[in-house]
Length: 408
Ligand SMILES: *Cc1c(COP(=O)(O)O)cnc(C)c1O
Image (tube, helix red, strand yellow):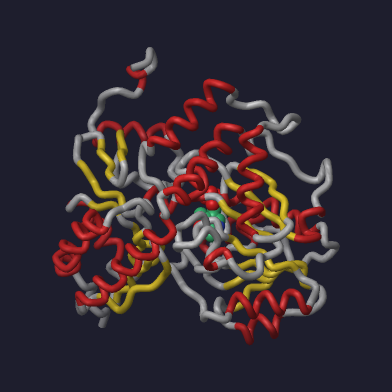
């Protein structure tokens, strides 16, 4: 207990939701719950109800809530040295940068940020330093909400009110090598892709798509920029989704964030080869990015993924989920897609938001990135038995939703 605990203590979900509505800008709509505590894969709301967390703070809490190593690492770092700005270096920041560089399997360097969008901003600025401007992005892509990351994000509803955005972005259909090839020429600075499209509903491209993108960008002297903000850090059963088993080529620019800090805000832009040398003093900056507390959180996450063999566990539990849902053979379910513990359950009808509500009433947190897609992205530490508690009720939840009537 501390002397400021009374500032947040007490209050029902209803009263807190009302205060939220008065004090918070309405950018996220009405909150679906007010959570007061988390432990492992479980959350508790302000009314004392317990939930199984199958969303993990949007693919963030890889080790679940209140993970002992993250907790002790952050506490120890904060009590030793909390923040110094980027005029100075810290051992935590250097060690995490080295750990991320090792993931690329090649010469690389790191720029730390506080979020995914900021990591993409850094990457965007680096593409301009090539002397070229044109960026090729993909239909359905999501890269964040800042002006630069929005410029390469597809959803018109997110973009329209904010025009003009940084220019010279061409969108091509995702997963379509021929369309990408047709859009390429020697004016292209970079091609930006998600290895699996997350916000678009866990869309997995054909198996050769990333290799083809690598070949096409190399042939045209353009950078390949992979946004691994959602797919990276173990979520897909790999540290980087585009380097399965830690093998093969690395992209020129790689952005990561979500899972890296287990909820402590941190992102990173990695650049490999000559691209690693493009940023020079004065080109870019950040006050908080790479803060030692955030960096130690990242180190604790990566050390735990390795120590507990969580990549193999993620693949195993993710495959179990896909098999079980497929075996249910429920008439509403079309198919399951995704990798590791980034899975989309694709429905035949636009009832995913209804299913999210029904699941919450039953004590499960899931989400609907698209009207017909449920996203399952639990902590990577989830056990089969925990996941099975959801799989057991899923058929009943699916039976509960009302199919919208065809309009005449
Ligand atoms: C979430 C996400 C972002 C944005 O990250 P923020 O931390 O919300 O800024 C960018 N790219 C992808 C692929 C994401 O899923």
